[in-house]
Length: 309
Image (cartoon, rainbow, N blue to C red; front, side):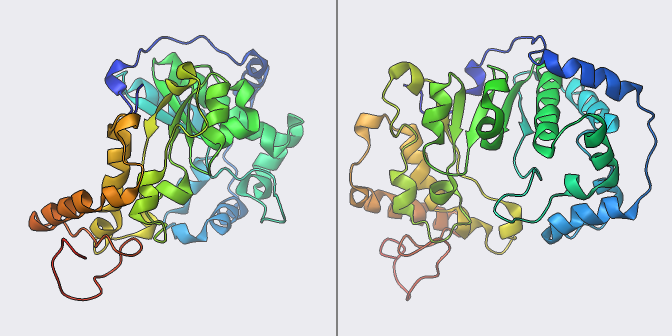
């Protein structure tokens, strides 16, 4: 049973387009005049969706619009520029501003004039444009011999349209991995409530006990779970707290992934001493790994040995 991502063992094959129904749209898009619409509302709408990004150069936002040919041309150029074809390129799929749900704010695609015009011309809803762009990005990456990783939103919204070579990265929660492998696709597990490091209330015990193969009992489907990944996002940390946010909780997940299932501790208390020792080794080497006791990134309750904190 494979319990970690083995990029070296992945086979890479050239890919023929698997989305023929998009071809007529691509042909029409190429015929359109490449006229840059200088509208401030384009930029402002995107920034309004993600104000925390504090974008200084709004021209960057303006140029990265999923349905514009310039964006697709950039992806083609970027994809053809790499020589290492074993590289797994993410064609993303997360954080796309699709139609509002549960009264959420409207996204940048809905508020951008030239995108609204494009949607009207092609008789598409925002969700359909999202699918169109993701599948187009997939075809570009695969045509250059790359393997692709998509966030789970693509699977949740149009999983039956994805290339059969897609690796789905599960992050939103439990239950997705089993659906992905049941559909015959490969999966990487990073469910946010257990393996997102900026969730400071997730203890190392939760990191350790999070099993990627939960409810996946078919041996052939188990092989489709490539492994797992703990995630740390830059907007939640800086140089002063990154190490204690990552360690030692990431080490608990690492043992889960690197250990044959039958050899794993059934009770995290059996792991405490070993993980405390590892945390001490990190401290001795200058890594500011946080204490085991309490939530992530917590300060020691009092002075004492790193073995007991």
